[in-house]
Image 1 (cartoon, rainbow, N blue to C red):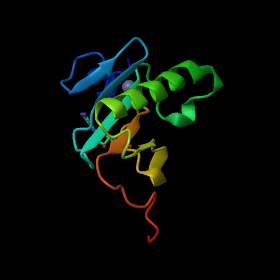
Image 2: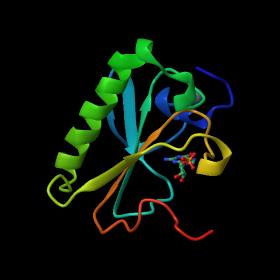
Image 3: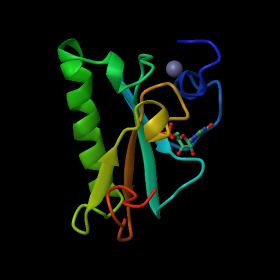
Image 4: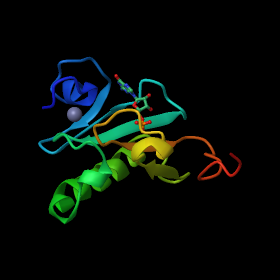
Length: 118
Ligand code: 5GP
Ligand code: ZN
């Protein structure tokens, strides 16, 4: 638990959120500012600032994150229509919360993968 980390607080139950799934490795909860009909954040319970801090040794937790994401996509009814799974690393990607989190987005056509004009 990293003090002052909002996602550590959500994982610990010290801050309210709409938790959809939690086990000994990962937690999933709805994004507070959803950008699509389904917008869920899937996070490791252990604090990492971003994906850049993860590696081979984190394969088990990363595998769990993928499995939980796919289960949530089925539960939310977007497995057939499709979904996007992404994580932002650092400034150019627009990372705002520095506890690694994976966005599960779906429920409508999601548009281009990245902005092509800037
Ligand atoms: P980032 O830009 O870092 O990839 O995304 C951070 C995400 O966290 C944003 O989509 C934002 O809406 C979400 N978020 C920030 N604070 C909270 C919070 O306190 N609770 C929840 N559920 N989501 C949050
Ligand atoms: Zn944290």
